[in-house]
Length: 196
Length: 204
Image (cartoon, rainbow over all chains, first blue to last red):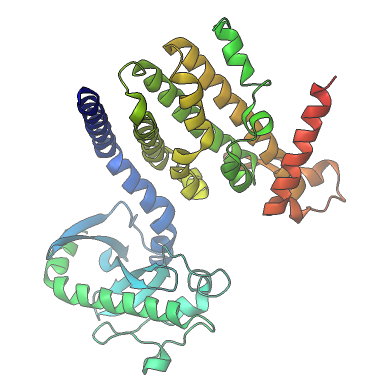
């Protein structure tokens, strides 16, 4: 009996201690990790979306509360005016979630440019969503007022050959961005006035 | 244990150098040694985990009940692995992206668990630290060497911190990269050849 109690006590204390230690380290590295992820994972997509912007979109970011979740927005300043925001959403791809960063032109609610951030799609098929500039280019100018769809589903986006699921994932992410954008537009415009 | 600290340390470098002599921990070896940088990064991460787990296992060896020792080892090891994962994400993100899933997999690396079970649980703190450091450095050197050979033959370069430090075609313009070496079978062949070389030298 004593031995049993000892086992339980040792395991409990050990687990509690390591849990506490990890929580402390996680809290201390959280901000740093977020910055690194932004620079290395989302950075390239954001930079490509805001080509020609005069600010640093990664530094000029803010968060807005959307229901229960907090969403990050990146701001692009063009010709001295904060006229575009980018936000990321996810769609269900073939190998997991496909992250799509969507730049939105605030003046007319259209897509500025998009870029795939994270994905686990098949190399050579779905993975082309990230590398094939022609695919991402089709989103340019699409209106966010209506859902973005691939041509098979009655939309305007031509799916990547052999990667319909991935293409649909990108479209659903873009549609999702449109919905978030519509919900938060009043607060967004308020925030954008701060960037001059 | 009659061995001195220096001997405990040194045995990890040659006598018991992990992948070659013990032939343990092959999973990360085969998977990450495509370049020197990956190999050395993986080796250093493992060294840190080994040091931490050996230290704590030897410190707590009188408290840990024998029946749940493996569970306790795993908690300690997993803690250190998570520390490495977080720190690497915060300070060496590109390396973390390349090593990816193989960092959390250090938890089940048999070298780490093996050292806890076979050494740290039976020895004092100082010998355990010496053992962990020796085995860790031995592992780092092995991964670095195998990574170097594979990268040199397979891609014709040696890369440190994203910068190519040595390009094969500089000294041998006709050199063609031997793609096979960076594929998975190349790892087996590379490992086998190095093992053979070590046995050749050691048998004299």
